[in-house]
Image (cartoon, rainbow, N blue to C red; front, side, top):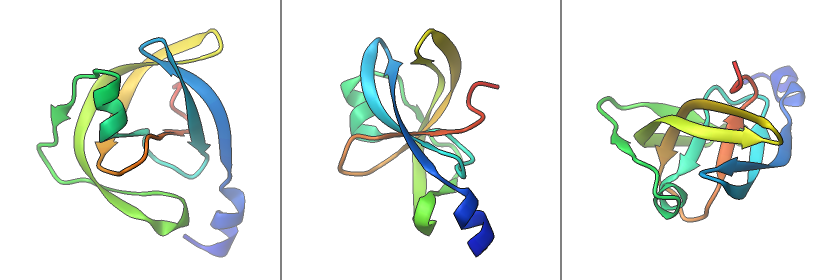
Length: 105
């Protein structure tokens, strides 16, 4: 990512609801996918499909993570807006959700 692209990328914090559970969330204007960590997906009892092909995602700061699974139709709500969309599952130690900015398309 160029320095100009890094300046244009910002992290926004918001509360969303997944399975009616309010969650603090990062909305990353530079992210290309929506991500949830495995331990949080399990706490929410979301059905995780196995990752059939290797996919690596890059997050803010250049960190790269391997996708270990997919939740194909997660119900994501902010305020009164609710949509279904894919959440890529990655392994990590703390609970977090990261949404791309065009997740409502």
